[in-house]
Image (cartoon, rainbow, N blue to C red; front, side, top):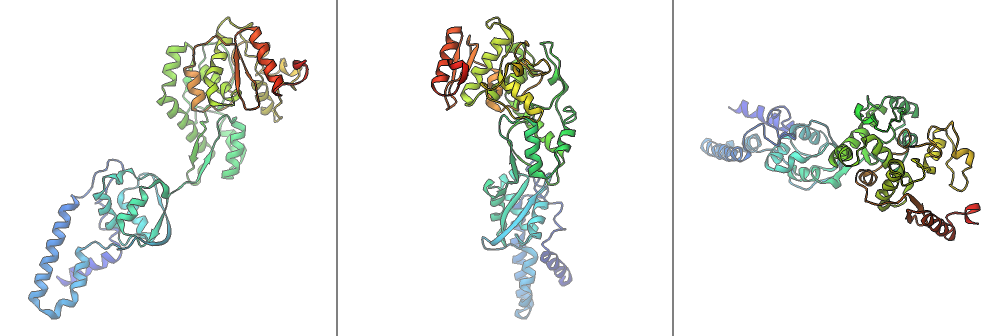
Length: 411
């Protein structure tokens, strides 16, 4: 009997990491692999009571072994809130036991079992997210659980991709943050389908043909990159986010039903609205102008005649973009430019930026209107809209007055 108790005590000193492997709380379904903790506690109390009776019957001289017997029945746990600092990783698929083991190894909890029981008693334990957490050493297990459930404890090793960035700029940013060469991102981007972009996204109803570009599919957001992530994994993460966002807003279904165009054409429109708009509030109206120019007879041609596409082509060639009043007619009408929108009908052959949610929503459900002109009329980015030639001239005068436009157009 005493030998059995000694073995149990040794296991407790090791944090009971092995014996409780099968009694865990699953983060996937929130159920316990063992029994209800309440019943276990009653059994513990009863067993401790019987141990007291036995020790009393043996005699006071045997009472020296009580502490060791008690440690067999009572889960080892620290009493205080902890001190110092420790970092603990929660990995994909970790169970409560796995997390408890990590906490024990880091000196955070006194035993794995203490954390498992705390998780079993707290229904929110299934909400622990994958990531790295800042906790304290020698904490009460229930307090450690609370920290793991607090987003403020999570150490975010993330990178933010701003809205409207083009893919080449994103590769540069990712390379700087991850130390992965830009060439690896470019190589991975050659086949967007391999990165998770569904084939149907490249279908068009306007008859235009272009390369399968990753442009437009790298959703702007803050990403927590996995340790040792590769270029394809990082780009796939961003594509998955794009698909999640467009899926939640029902982008594909709405565009096909309400606009009568392909989702890819709407994505191109969103990318242009993102590139042309300073303020988010203007993106839906800019999308409407684009649709009115390309898909109706309201404009003098079914062309875009926008400078952002010209500048996109310049940036693809490693050149700096230019202001509208600096661009030459030879650049606007360059027949070698596959992204030219002057003297060429229809949308661009690919998106020209990676649009955010507001731009996507604007292209999906733009407001009704007959506008065919939009212009940035002041240095704050205020946009003006017009339908007629008179409206165009009025907007141009505002630009000149406010110092947005200069040169021959203001004479």
